[in-house]
Length: 241
Image 1 (tube, rainbow, N blue to C red):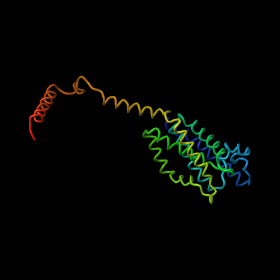
Image 2 (image 1 turned 180 degrees about the horizontal axis):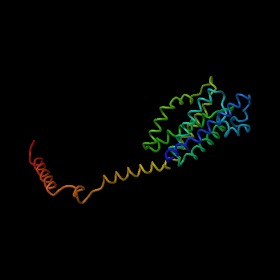
Image 3 (image 1 turned 30 degrees about the horizontal axis):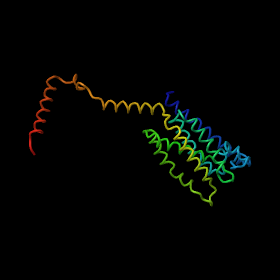
Image 4 (image 1 turned 120 degrees about the horizontal axis):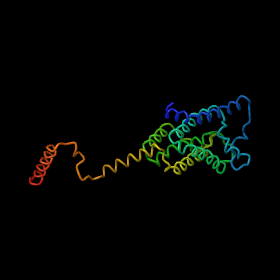
């Protein structure tokens, strides 16, 4: 198996595990009628501390589950594949910090679902492109804008809908902060592209004692070019227009 195929396979392992877990939890809840409120986030309540780590795995219904499964899988896979150097620590920090900040500042009701960390992962991908400004990151940012621009609706408070807009906003902010924190930890392919760009710029700025094509042209060709240049200079200097 090639390195690219192995890298792609490895980048899908964690997203697959996460999605499988949230589906198993929901199916157990649905078929066994389990009350999983003890796994939910309950801000500023001791009984909600466990939810910092467990609430992303609990969902209200299948619609809620479907809406979070695909973006969770895709965003996690993108980070693992394209940013392997910082992927694991970035994912962990977004996961934990989003939960902690939600527990500290969100409304004191039960919060469940993976949407908070999904917003964090998507925000991380977008802002990494903004901060690094290399081709790979910019393209990924554009893809994220196209795929998930509709997620901005989830940032608007709507008392009539049972949506934890605070977790969305907090995840978005945490993702941007983590992207800024690791903006200078470039991946090997990004470093190689940067070094190539620098070498091209240095090459274009060099001055040479002898013409670069001195060994590629005959003496007669060089003399002919010099004669043409002199004639052109005479026409330019001694002709009035």
